[in-house]
Length: 216
Picture 1 (tube, rainbow, N blue to C red):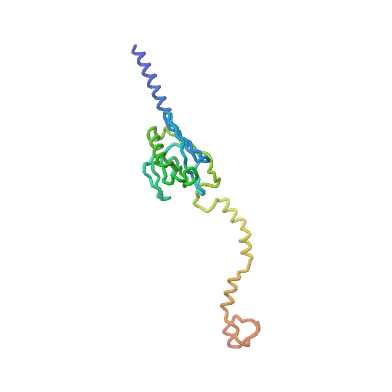
Picture 2 (picture 1 turned 120 degrees about the vertical axis):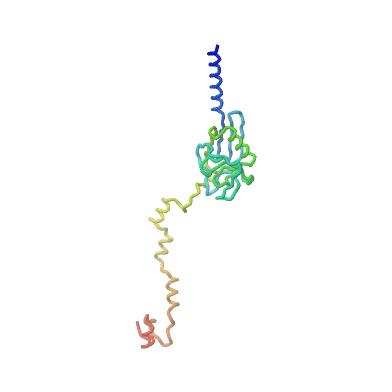
């Protein structure tokens, strides 16, 4: 009888372990549609509007797990509040925003923005189930098709190398063209010819005024 009770206990523990392993949050971000789908293994399901990276910035694609949760966070880099932030890659996070009127179109610096109430709900779900049981998948591209990762430099190495090896026609024309401004300054800096002088103004002015005007 004890063996039977032991087997039943082991089966129950294994079932509890499987249930706990399956418990979690599945977050799917569709950047092209500007929507986020959130489902949990205990039956909750939500679909909300988002704002991803606007022109000049890009929200990274990929599959991630939350790296940290910050209920009250402020971005010193961009100067904005990020309430109920769920960070998933470096400084990228899913968080609430006061710019609710922009939801449904790209407007962020790369993060996923949510309505504050929806961000609070997602934050609570991730906290409840745990970061290790939360999956965040992002895919697609912004509708403008122009958003890209922000770069500190002015361009890629390939573009810089191309610019160095092959100057533009405007630069080449500027190199060939005479520098009229410099020539004009030289002319204006020379003293005027005295009355009765012939020819060009000599470079040796002291000798010129001692001996009188001469041809060059």
